[in-house]
Length: 113
Length: 115
Image (cartoon, rainbow over all chains, first blue to last red; front, side, top):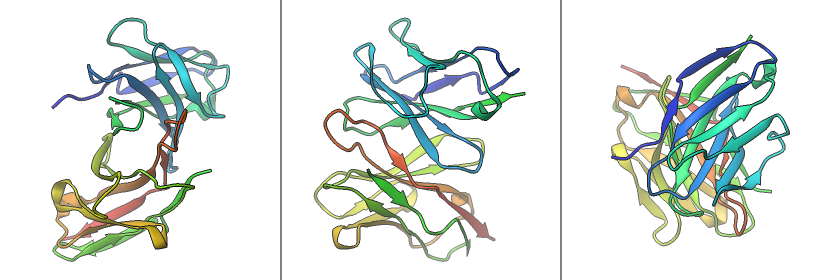
């Protein structure tokens, strides 16, 4: 069964450093998403991406965040200057259409020290 | 704005007992509703979904959920719980309509299973 793949599974970084989280969505999917889950809290939407541009973003997704689809398979989330409060599990998801099921990857745990 | 409430933070059941996890939503139109499960250290796996039609939906691992519009609820049920069902369960609603694609999640219910 096709799946969403995220790398790395765990990323440790120093405050102020840039990080790039990588995702390979399911191959025939057209919509891509990032969510995050701070430890003990609910999963929160960050951004959706379609046709090489952001479709929707939440208040959390400020200027420190960016997304990119650098080639035909990868979808990345960049945090320019990490803060302690960026420590969370980041989930990538993809869907075939806008109102279809979103399939999630296993997540990248980001630890900012 | 859409919202999801899962009133039970933690539930403990004995193996073989029945299970019902509650989910209430707030949404302006007919919602799309989902239940996801997250095992420790794992990602979110879709258990089942409701888009339209029959209000009782079947999912994987023997789970089912019933959409009740009058109660704005989408409770998850399983007749006999297995130890491997211990996990965190998230109810979600969305996408909300044209131009919006996000899922809104509840805070989750952690299920513990006593052997």
